[in-house]
Length: 261
Image (cartoon, rainbow, N blue to C red; front, side, top):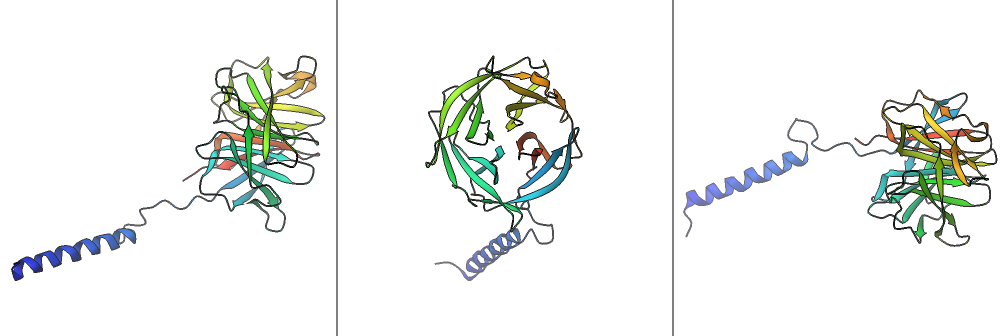
């Protein structure tokens, strides 16, 4: 049998525990919220004019909870602006978004196949890397090599399916010694496929490589391409560890995602 004093003590303990849990859920009783604000993914755009100059931002909506914000690609297919992220914990699954002019947002699944799969991924492909491009005929996905930083693997979309099939590898040549291979992007513009990489230790400039059909490689400064490009005026909360690029037929565009809180 419990004494009255023991029952009273037990009741007070339970009351104290319930109060503590309630205060914790409400932010600690005046100490402010103990949880970080929910991440609002935002895409920052810069347009090329003797350098890439910041122009505007776009919100990204409807993303699955397991979207990997560190692996991003963009392209323009002649009609739509498209945005891609990998699925967390995978190296072969893409989530697709497209720009909705009615909402002015990039929406998951808008005018898109929501989920796509890369097939026959080489064992040496770096699953932490991603770029996308479109040459006016085909959609492409690209990954870097794990063992050879100057090699990229290309996948091509298989029409009327949900898959990108591995196509071939390409080499990147004549790169400056201070090329940052962890920050890179690809696009197709002015009748040529192009590869871009950061410069080690700085956010700007970036280096441009153009595809040489004779050597079948991407060469720094080849064919009159501007070899070094400035990136100017991007918002202070830009995640500069990763960038993406596209050409819409008239403009070259550069993109950062905002930082996570």
